[in-house]
Length: 68
Image (tube, rainbow, N blue to C red; front, top):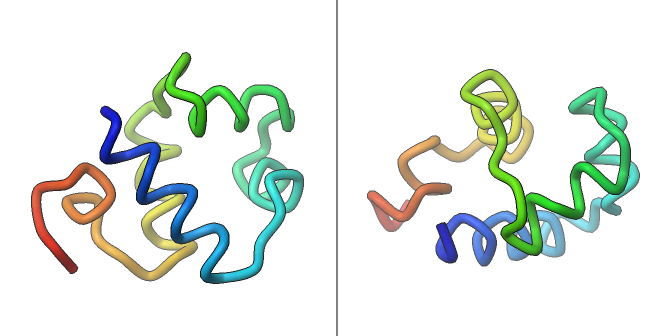
């Protein structure tokens, strides 16, 4: 899931969103969100869809299945 980590961080920085803001949007703790970025945890399907919707990208993009 390295591509997911890279794209998650990239989208967060491009959109100038903090880890705390995204964690609040996902209704999880900031340490839980940080685990997504460092690869020690993966979001469930519900959270993955919410992340994709937040950044207006596809789940496939976040998972590295497409380039857009």
